[in-house]
Image (cartoon, rainbow, N blue to C red; front, side, top):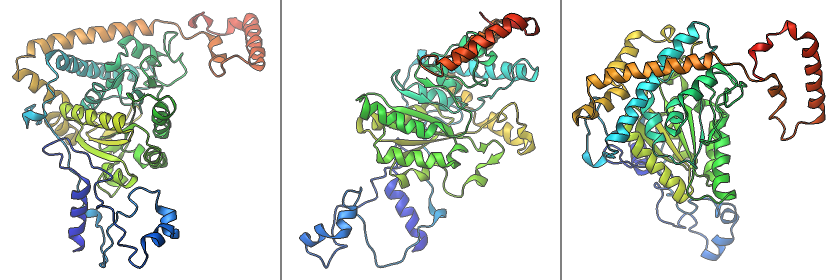
Length: 451
């Protein structure tokens, strides 16, 4: 009896995702309203009881099933399904679930995957040469980036973690934007104030990435709330990307509870890539991944194959529909694999075998799936692949050279953008610095800075 209870509860809260895009609804497991748990009270007495006054405004009040048996919900019995459309070879498993995005869009997505991999190859090597200070690759996770970004609209507000390069590229962040940020030159939109890969763009509604882990998650809950309940925007949502490691932070739990109780139209997109730096997921949690936590907070939840571009697209479309039309948060867990090192400060071969990495690269790469789909329809070929690889590398190296040759932001920029108007004490400090450089400038590399 104890072991049979958990599967029944999971079945009640989860729609099968093996055959359709389903949502694990936080409302689905409760029966029709009933006051049978107050059998000794009349309706009037029940309505005035302390219990009724305390709980009557809470969701699902009077909708619980009370039983006479002591049952334990066993954690080892839960196993939420994972939605998939494409096989690892790029074959559509059920034609009804092919989003039919068309040749132009899919070729653009595949070319963006090539650009992402080329950028990672070049910039990783450039960091190793000491020409930039830091870099983080995106190997193995391009499907979750592009599949989700393709659904979103310009007014949707995005909070990233640090491994969402494809989302930025799809929204219009240029190769030049990327290189200028990595080199912190005077054309960097962030004016050289952030570490490399901490991108941001006001024009693209992409908040600047912050190094401290998980801080963007509660911010996204508030941004989603403001979109709907302060500004009255009923056709926009907030999307927050984060990794499985960030879901172990306290900010994650507070954010989900805030979003659920405040009806914030926020999509929490967890990239579960198997590792939080060097910590594998089996050491991070004992439950059934991150998705299992959603219904507990009253949040509709979907688990998806994060290496399947089509599945991610369908899931994001469903999640956005719920968020915008119902003003409800949604939790998406994209199951993927981090092929690269965590960052240029990490050597992942110290905690995982090379055979594990090669298995994922060979058997379940997002690029392989999409290319298989394209080739089966005559939309791609090896000849075109070779041409695109060559042309893309040339573009990347050209943008790198241009960014590397540019000057650093002007020295006076350090006094701006903290306040709407520069206060008197900063004006005095700026004057002091200017006077100092006028007399002692010969000791500083002032020619390296833009004027």
